[in-house]
Image 1 (cartoon, rainbow, N blue to C red):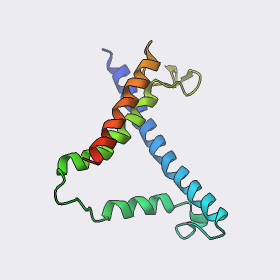
Image 2 (cartoon, one colour):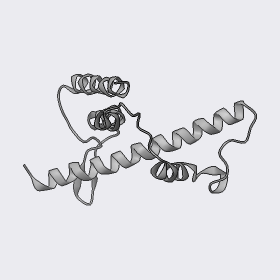
Image 3 (cartoon, rainbow, N blue to C red):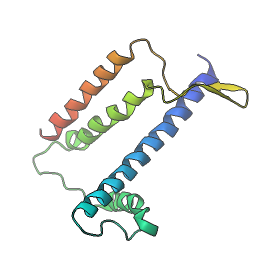
Image 4 (cartoon, one colour):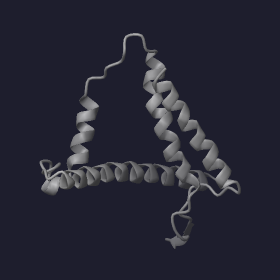
Length: 139
């Protein structure tokens, strides 16, 4: 396999994962602001101007938060359950074309990571894996 092709897949996958995770964070901020407006309260507005740094503050808080694991839970399964639920949601987007192809510095770039003929089957099979994370979380 061509080294440049593998490098392109890795770079596109890494960039797209960062875009998705950042998008999730700022959609959560939008949801919190909309709910606060509906409930006639301020909402998140302390971190940065207009609260736009709130997702970063939430991430830092989550990193340093104490982890509580139930006494009789299997620690490995309890830790992997959220990962098994979120990772398929990010992996599914590998076959979704996000726009037209274009040339950049003489290199043809497609705005999808994988081009497979059975994209719908791929999406359904990967989406079915996320259910296992939900089941394992209650194990």
